[in-house]
Image (cartoon, rainbow, N blue to C red; front, side):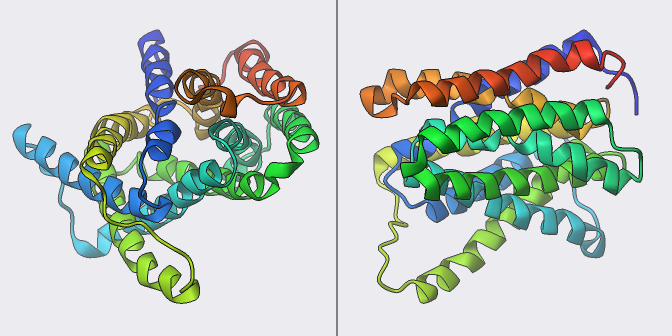
Length: 294
């Protein structure tokens, strides 16, 4: 793993700002969470393929080699369904803050996958995030369903980011992004009849309106192709823990944007903001407690 430069961390911060729009864009559409994922991943995989063609880059690999990438894509599909589902079941703020527990999950899972020692500093920072989550649970109990779905989304995000850290050492970023978005698209396509059969009385809005297509296009191309491609590149230089810890800044941008767009219905309790500050504190402390970490 090569050492990250200051420009890499600036790029990571830009990615986090872009990702801060994702929950908002998903909420602005009338399409169900599954539908949002279905169209987002289709546009993302198509967009990645077109970009590669324009740049004259060869991103296709043998089918057998692509299976792990397609499998990670299926995990990403589930993650996004839970992420958008959490926002629908509660608020954008809840879905974004619960997503921040990825750093705690990563502090445990990444060393297990890499077969390295667990960093107790990373675990303690992750515990600080969990402490923040305690306040969210305590004061926003009416959103319990959304919180639980959000935590599942966070765990799935941990799994695919740790797996991507391994895959990034073997494949080019554009190849990984293309196959994972294609895998996520196929998985969401398979999930549609399963969910409709499992919950026949539930209404699923799957056909986007003209307005929905605008938001989905921005979500699929601007907020997916660029950030996910760049994140895969960054995983050649930084750890999955550092990546996920930095992405904990996403709620700060997302909550501010959500309040500006949706107004009072995104206003939360004081306890929620205490929890948010604790989570933010884990991001601020990380470079000081672990300065040599990539």
